[in-house]
Every structure is written in C-alpha cells, then in structure tokens.
Length: 246
Image (cartoon, rainbow, N blue to C red; front, side):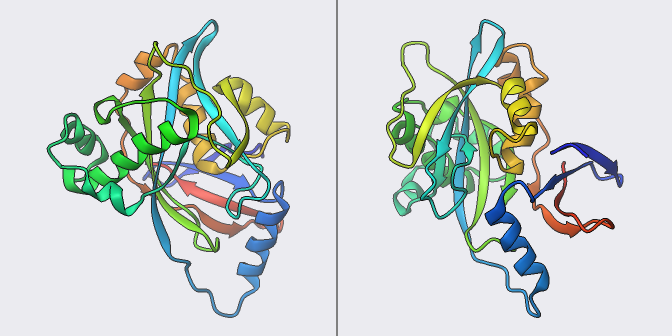
C-alpha cells in the first residue's frame, strides 16, 4: 500500500495508514514500544503549526522547511513553520480580533484557542520572517503525536494566506532548507522516498492538493476533531500508524 493511502472506513471517517519503515529512528522506537512489557504514554506539549499558502503559476503553494538532522524531534523531516506554545503565548486576550472566529472553527473557546493562535503568529515570524495576525488564521486540524514517541505534541494545524508585501525566508537555526512547493510535487517526492514527512503533514498536503487556488482552500471549513494515530502491526508484520480522520 502506498504511503498515506486510504484503506477502509468504520463509519466514523476515512482511515489512512503510514508505514514507519522509511524512517529508521521512528521504526526503532515503534518496535521498542511494541515489545515493551509496560507502556507509558509520554507527556504532551501544546503546539501550533501554520500552512502558509499562496497562489503559484500552477496552483496553490505552501511554505515548508526541512528540520536539521540534529533535532531531537522529527530530524531531517519536512514540516510547516511552527513550534511549542510558550508561557507568554497565554497572555493573548480572548478579545483579540479574529480569535472568536478561529476558536469557532477549532471547536473551542476563545480562551482555549488564544495560546495556540499566539504561538502560530510568533512561530511564523521567528521561523520565516513573515508577520501575520490572528485574524489571518484558519483552523485546519488537531493532531496528537502517537503514544510511543518520547517527545509528544498536542498540535493545532492552522493556515494563513501569505501577505503579498512580504517575503518568506529562512530565519531559523532549526531548519536547513525551506521554500515554496506544490502539494502534489512534495507528495510525489514523499511517495518515492526522497523526503520524510509525518502523517499530519501528508494529510494536510493531500487536502491542499484538492483545491485550485489558495483563497478557496482558506475558505474551506473542514470538520476538526482531535486525531491520534495508533501504532498497529498488520498481518504481514508491517508496523503502521493508523489514523481515523474526521
């Protein structure tokens, strides 16, 4: 089965499976977890990531970065700009313009959405030098890192339109390569094993691929629910991350 391909439905949503074998480190941690006599879920850290999108000559493009190989979490992996929620992010007032609308799309209160929105705005500026506002953000998904990972994140995936008067550039020491890509092109490279991506990134790109332009994508209001991939061993012995999408 191809990486990230749909397999079946149980009435609650589309089911996708992502083999862990292409990432040696991920595969090793997964095998260790499956063999453990006692399994303890790692602690979760709140985080936010942003699909910064624009229109290219051949359709919508998204800005991505490749994390440096020395990173403790997801080394050499292609991701969207983002990171953990800092204590200062909790200071964002619930009355901030645009926050109520974002919270409604996320299915939470404005107070609950505030630190994630603040982290998203801050991380985008820190990692690619682009200044956006809370009112620019759109809710896309809510993913939780699988239980077997030692570093786990409770992550909201948001999206925003790239401001026309700004330029995205590499401003973070956490990545060694960045740029604008078409979703289809990056998915093709991933399927060929040329790039490494985590399931949330793969699914998000598959969703973006279905739209003809960035504004239509941002106008979309997907059903958002908490998603937690489960580590499963298939009958043939292959370990996969199985995810039920909303």
